[in-house]
Image 1 (cartoon, rainbow, N blue to C red):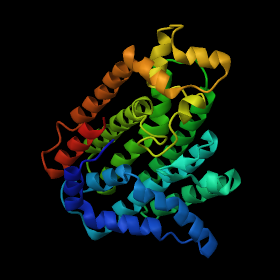
Image 2 (image 1 turned 180 degrees about the horizontal axis):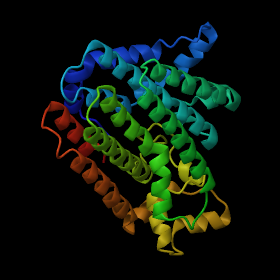
Image 3 (image 1 turned 90 degrees about the vertical axis):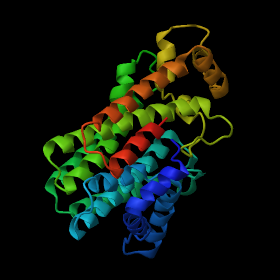
Image 4 (image 1 turned 60 degrees about the horizontal axis):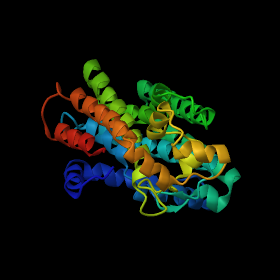
Length: 329
């Protein structure tokens, strides 16, 4: 996903103060020990190179009906920080599982400090995220945040379980990413509305918008693994080809396996137990139409996200959310 300069400016015009405060809190985490603080900065500094999309969604949704009081505004920032920390911690753990060496264009924490240190750092960041949410005293948001941590863990476990499973279906994949990715997008938008006491219908609608946005985000991110091959780092800043060579089959590959063609480069390499040539596989997926099929599914979720907003009042925030959805692909 690429957020244009014009969209970035529109977002900053509405929530620049809150974004600046959120970034400050991310870089000023205090664990009461200079060594641990330095390690935490090593992890959270990568947020500067991330999109902060989920956190921005929380603040934007909270401002949907205009300015809010000081307490609600601070709570929106706290949960935005928690969302980014939760996302960051999950990436630290993902990199351990995937044996990744790159994240957001930098050397990954596990590569620099080893898996043992990375496990503990991920756990600490998870816990710190929870502290920011608890500080809002909003029980509903606390419960939602806790269930989201469970969802993220389930998604990772399901991904590990499905490795190299050539029999998995599109439905298996969609369920997995609903947990691993879409759940945090849903929580981001849901929490923004819950913190400012929007009505139940708006709360559910904005949560569903986040869920559909999350589906689309993951599908297009997986497609980019086969279409963004100009260098060794993907748009998300991770190693190109790491998913497929770790046995993680994403939507374009799963669609191609349903075709059951022995000319599929994936079959040839998995039988010989060699590393998969991602460029060859990407070319095959594109030429045979599987990238296009996956793109159409991603577009469907973008359209669903856009439709989620159609009955909400028209204002600047709604326009921004619609533009974000349209930028996903």
